[in-house]
Length: 225
Ligand SMILES: N[C@@H](CCC(=O)N[C@@H](CS)C(=O)NCC(=O)O)C(=O)O
Image (cartoon, rainbow, N blue to C red; front, top):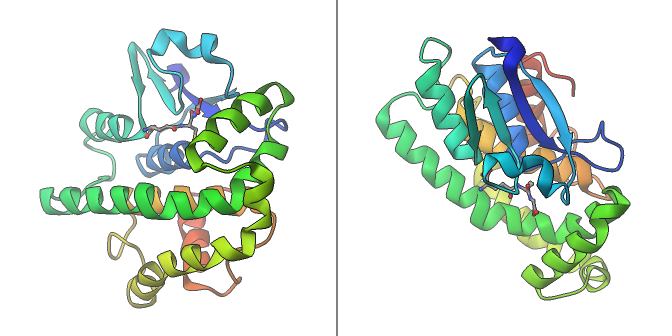
């Protein structure tokens, strides 16, 4: 079974660099469930290669006969298909709270991070992806990458402010989900790992409780820092 599990994952020009926040969620979720898989590096414009899945975005998980896209759908598939592994959502109330974490991450944290890293991502991705990436992201943010990069210091406070409640939480409990990690941790980790791997400057101090939580998550799953 494990030999047939495959994860399509966003790759940079250097295909060993994988920074997608949504793919990181699923990599941690798979590790949490102790499921092995093979990753398939994928570039933004390789839409034909994933047409079979019905989406042009990753992550896409192939698990035997099942083809699932969208990180939330994949997490729910893993929880339903592998109920005997460690749980991703715990009880129904925690599952509901995980949606708040997802929406906060995607609607507050992701935009704050994007304004700091998107110009640098453009420099990191495969040359064949660069025009597409510039056109689509500049349209979303309403400014050129050059304008965005020039405003880096201006955009930093929104990112720092977004992290305040997370840092306060991690000062008093080990994980977002409590004494052990769960999918809520994976969601937020994905965003901050994306930031870490693509920011032109370090965004967290080494002794920041958030940085320590990220390291503990990776170490707990036996993943490389
Ligand atoms: N809602 C999707 C979002 C996935 C997504 O946006 N993936 C990005 C990589 S981080 C992507 O594949 N983008 C392709 C594109 O923009 O063309 C999920 O949760 O999986």
